[in-house]
Length: 241
Image (cartoon, rainbow, N blue to C red; front, side, top):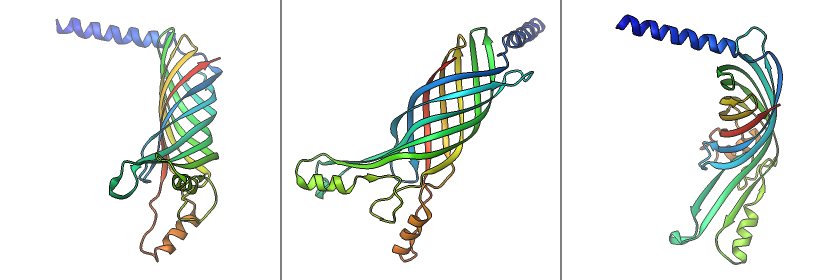
């Protein structure tokens, strides 16, 4: 009985491998349009995760005689950042204040991946590689859930450009350039429709050296800022042309 089970398992594995080879993706270039949702965070900043949007385009090149190995690169507009909601006022008065960074980047991912077709119309893939990004706009916005001129003045003071080159310690800002590493897994149906999940870890410190030095000097050398880095989880839909 055991021998029969082993033979059946071996035949199933062989059939699966043969089917995967039969359904290997064709070599050459393909293009994909993307749109989706980000859940991003600025690590070590004390802020919580924030939801944003993304859209972009990819070009994939399936390597010849590489059994599903491919290279991919793209250009994305992606919205990252973080937010923090807390009670404001004396004695923890019931006044909500929300502090939010909305950071907009143009991002170039470059990855190597592998695709496995389980059926003629269904394939799964995974990819890994670096990304490079530049901030093209963004704000820090403060909103206070109360009426009156005082609330408006507080909101105005807490709203500013997030990539501004400044040493104002009351208005922490970031450098524009970012880079990191990411991976993505996905499924494709009927050679067109894609659903993807991905994570990106920023490796660059987001604070400018000038801002970091100003903070250190203001504390007379007693405190230094932690390194803050982007983190992003994405859910993306794509259409392959």
